[in-house]
Amino acid sequence: MLVLPMSCPASRVRSVLEELRITELGVIEDATLPLSRGLTVITGETGAGKTMVVAGLGLLFGGRADAGRVRPGAKKAIVEGRLLMHNVDAAARERVSECGADTDDDELVLSRTITAEGRSRANVGGRSAPVGALAEIGGHLLSVHGQSDQMRLLQPAEQRAALDRYAGQDHQKLCATYQQAYERWCALAQELEERTRNARENAREADMLRLGLTEIAQADPQPGEDEQLAEEARRLEHAESLRLAAAEAHAALAGAADGEAEQADAGALLGTALRALQAQADTDTALGELASRLDTAVDVVTDVSVELTTYLGGLDADPSRLDEIFERRAQLKALTRKYAEDIDGVLAWAQDAQRALTDLDSSDDALARLEAERDELAVQAAELASKLTQSRQDAAVRFAEAVTEELTGLAMPHASVVAAVEPRAVSKATQALQIGGQTYGAGPDGVDDVELRLCAHPGATASPLQKGASGGELSRVMLAVEAVFAGVGGPPTLVFDEVDAGVGGEAAVEIGRRLARLAKQHQVIVVTHLPQVAAFADLHLAVSKDTAGAVTVSGIREVADAQRARELARMLAGMPDSQLGIAHAEELLAVAAKTKNH
Image (cartoon, one colour):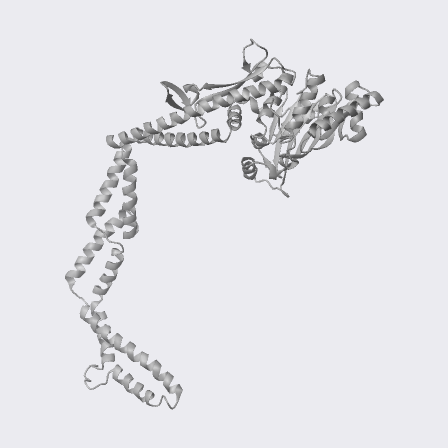
């Protein structure tokens, strides 16, 4: 029998729901439920409205709106829940963030309103949201097991995911490795399909790219060439004015102004001034500093004079060179009109075009290379899928044995559960893999369909859970399944309704014990009519009804200490004030406390 650690610290219990408020729903006029980490049980007389709590949770997390559940005479029913966000997984946090929700001190408030006319509204963290958002958030937070609820573990995809979690870390690594290989294979197969389908269009586009590349290659533009030619053209077009300006400046610096051969040059005059100042530099430091600055000016004037001589010697006014530049610039302009704003952009376009040609290559050789690579990746994915199937089958055997053993203690000694791992039909998938000569439908999770089936007694045919069990039996099977899955992921909050239907005596104690074990790692909420189960509660809520008025009204209160014993006595014999019943209830509480502490 699977035994969950009873010494698991309370800090490991992932409590999510902190409080639930229900207004005008069914027989409940206005009730607030404080929810505890660990095991919370809800008890009450028949018809008092216990199942309205489960119905309220269903509505809060995206369940179908039914105007018939609005309390007679009320305009609308409201369900609000306060969640602790630090226990919410990343996927749920992301969905909450997408709704634009505001969280206060790491808390989140969800609400759902249903009017008497059947209209429904949802609210996530103070922001209006689609009802589907509540369902998506709830899928990560809550799993409800009851006769009329859409149960998470009845969905094939979740059954496969849960089995994968149960199989362990090595199996999950294998799942990730397969998924990577599958995605690479699909990506290449899609690329090959697109190239084949668009071969003619790709060929036309490739031809256009080749024409452009040929034109650019023939012109052979150099980086920045257009700007360099523009600058040279400006010099040639203004060569005479540039020559006159440079010659005049050079004459002024060199001292050879027009008609004045004896005129001293600027360098000589500065040299005379420098020598005069240097002669008195020792007498007055101020003149020394001026001399130092004047010395720099002499160097600058000399350098500029030399450079002007070089500039005048290199200044070209050849008209043929200007014609060459105009012709080259026209050639480059033709490129910039077609491909980019400047020559550097044209060269960048050529690089991009060369890369695009590789992607557009739809020649027979290119397609053959892609086909070979695709087939190689398909073989790799098939090999990993085969290993994944074997690993799932091994885990399925262990899982089925553990759940079947759990059922023995839940008053279903002749029942057994089978985790069927079967090949997926090609018609149920978008891809197909060849494994061992057979073709299977493939997806990112492998080539397997996983289905949990119940065999009610030896010799009976195993049927899907929802078809092979009654409501009460199904809840017990779900309890056994959740107990086996405990500690390997899944929603942090589990809700059970009618889990103890048709059970009593020792089996009821076993149910209570298993729920208490499960509550060591999950927040567990149970609606029960069995005192043996209620005795294991960490928090006990009692629903009571008042039929004094025209309409039955129910309220919910926490019971503890002596009040709890009286509630258990009522559940035992219908006599809350019976001393014998109270004594029996106290004995149940003592046995439960002793069991929980071991």
